[in-house]
Amino acid sequence: MLKLQDVFKTYEGKAEVTALSGINLTIGAGEMVAIMGPSGSGKSTLLNLMGGLDVPTSGQVMVGGKDLAKESEKGRSLFRRSKVSYIFQAYHLMPTLRVSQNVALPLHLAGVPAGEIAQKVARVLREVGLDGRTNHLPDELSGGERQRVAIARALVTDAPLLLADEPTGNLDTARGEEILSLLRSIHRERGTTIVMITHDHHAASACERLIRLRDGKVEDDGAVAGGGR
Ligand SMILES: Nc1ncnc2c1ncn2[C@@H]1O[C@H](COP(=O)(O)OP(=O)(O)OP(=O)(O)O)[C@@H](O)[C@H]1O
Ligand SMILES: [Mg+2]
Image 1 (cartoon, rainbow, N blue to C red):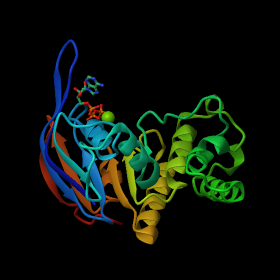
Image 2: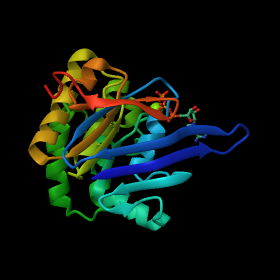
Image 3: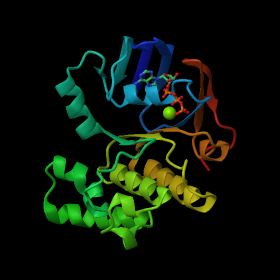
Image 4: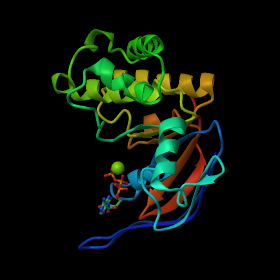
């Protein structure tokens, strides 16, 4: 599903930052993987490359047999729309759209018929426990609720690859646990490949494999003991 080879990412600017320096990774279809590592170790940068949001300075990012590093902006945008869903660290909700409209957005972009959209949106909002907030604007929600809207928007499209940047970072233990079991059931039932960044060992133990980053390199990569609960 995903294969990264000799991936380097340097951000140009006043001070040049090498965020990734020589990443080699293969993630198979249907895996559920956690990524951990200190702040600034390159986790979000890595996820952005996997999702085609950015391109590496050098190296290959193969997703489903295509090298995203070689794709045009248009090719990557098509990939993002059809093959991947993304839960951002900073949510990225549309401030002028209501909860249900935010969640419906990727389906509208994909040209799904209105009746089907309404049904799917209602179902996924129920799953994340937000059916009482469908007409709120993002500003009128708590941080944890906004995070759940972002999760609902990612789940609504049934994409084969789900990338999540700290999906439970702003949730209390009980809510976080609900979201983790939701992600696990999607992984199990739909075979969705999930790559999830987390700072939380408990969240990581919902996954079967844990990759640790340090200073832009893979420090450790292996099975989670007792993982995939
Ligand atoms: N757009 C950018 N321009 C310049 N430098 C950047 C940019 N984005 C990230 N960096 C730098 O690259 C390094 C890796 O950043 P990244 O966001 O991948 O870290 P992270 O592991 O996700 O950290 P956190 O746990 O705090 O979210 C950091 O040193 C950061 O300052
Ligand atoms: Mg980050």
